[in-house]
Image (tube, rainbow, N blue to C red; front, side, top):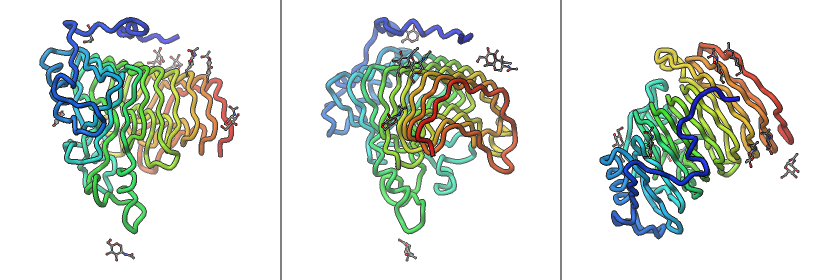
Amino acid sequence: MFLIVFPILVLFGASLQPSNGQVFNPIHYGAKGDGISDDTAAVRAALAAAASNNGGEVLFDAPFAFLTGCFNVTSNVILNVKGTILASQDSSNYVQIEPLPWYGGGQDAQLSGNLEWQPVVRSYKASNITITGGGTIDGQGAPWWTCLHRGNDSEHLVGAPCNGISRPNLIMLVYTTDVTIYDITLKDSPSWTTHLAYCTNVHISHVTVLAPWDSPNTDGFDIDCCVNVLLENSFYSGGDDAIAVQSGMDYFGRTFGRTTENVIIRNMTIERSHGLSIGSEMSAGIRNVTFENISVNGSDAGVKIKSQRGRGAFVQNVTYTNIRLYNVK
Ligand SMILES: *[C@@H]1O[C@H](CO)[C@@H](O)[C@H](O)[C@H]1NC(C)=O
Ligand SMILES: *[C@@H]1O[C@H](CO)[C@@H](O)[C@H](O)[C@H]1NC(C)=O
Ligand SMILES: *[C@@H]1O[C@H](CO)[C@@H](O)[C@H](O)[C@H]1NC(C)=O
Ligand SMILES: *[C@@H]1O[C@H](CO)[C@@H](O)[C@H](O)[C@H]1NC(C)=O
Ligand SMILES: *[C@@H]1O[C@H](CO)[C@@H](O)[C@H](O)[C@H]1NC(C)=O
Ligand SMILES: *[C@@H]1O[C@H](CO)[C@@H](O)[C@H](O)[C@H]1NC(C)=O
Ligand SMILES: *[C@@H]1O[C@H](CO)[C@@H](O)[C@H](O)[C@H]1NC(C)=O
Ligand SMILES: *[C@@H]1O[C@H](CO)[C@@H](O)[C@H](O)[C@H]1NC(C)=O
């Protein structure tokens, strides 16, 4: 029984009713949708029009493939991905953003000196955002993974597209409330796939996350400084944690002080992964997390609660029920 009310659940199985009935189609803003032409400007124009309208449906229709750099999703937007969004592999289609204050640096901070490429799909201080449509958001992460490892040390951000700056997440929703992500495939993220950063009231269902087993940091679902999250009925096979419940890192996380709490993760199927994780970034504490009815087959690890010396805080009231681990190292 999930006690939190999700007003947007009525969307399941129902036809989408965007605000003012408006549909914003990047094709109408000049996108080619051929998977080769750079559609960044048209995609951003469609999102900007939806923002001016205080929301609506932004339609990435099938059978089109939209090659685009990063963009912002604003309040009351339904990102309806029936076709494919192909993330650009050219960093000139990305903008640099401030790192999260509870990290104190970009995701590859020790390498990048705190700068971060904007995630492909990002919201900031928004509410009522839906990402759905049955299609695919493909991060095309291969060159980003390569530049992380390029050079003669183990990890660098040398060369394009990294150019010395932290890789983008595929989706990052920041300070966002009332989030629904369902019926979509998320593939080959340059780094973390779905990063919920200081979100409240989140429902994720029927999401498939895919990445090669050796792709670096391709976490599936990072639930980071969030309250009231239901993650269910989803699939992960990738290169890092299938799920990571977190709350900031060291001094920055403790100072920021946003505890992650009231999280339910259930009915998940996990294949290649580093497991179901709590931490290691958990400096504002984590409480009240349930993992239920989860099958893990072929992972490096099953269940992990991890921290680091000096990290601080607490992990409380975590329940694991009916977790089935097969072929776990
Ligand atoms: C997205 O919004 C941020 C502000 O939150 C801004 O700095 C950035 O330039 C925007 N990105 C794009 C692609 O417009
Ligand atoms: C959420 O956004 C959708 C799409 O624009 C809209 O139809 C709906 O009314 C919004 N819900 C609320 C509570 O504002
Ligand atoms: C490491 O790479 C740098 C730059 O590519 C090069 O100058 C240096 O000689 C290399 N060091 C070794 C030990 O290969
Ligand atoms: C569990 O998730 C699968 C999709 O992975 C779905 O087909 C099934 O209906 C879900 N079961 C329940 C009880 O929701
Ligand atoms: C813990 O989370 C559950 C929902 O998962 C909620 O019903 C309960 O109120 C929470 N407990 C506290 C103390 O917040
Ligand atoms: C438990 O998860 C499995 C898939 O891993 C699914 O087939 C089944 O319907 C789930 N049961 C419940 C009660 O959610
Ligand atoms: C502990 O977790 C259980 C299961 O989510 C919840 O029902 C209960 O309210 C939690 N207790 C506290 C003290 O948070
Ligand atoms: C685990 O995966 C292997 C390889 O795909 C498969 O042969 C096996 O049947 C699976 N086991 C379970 C219990 O699902």
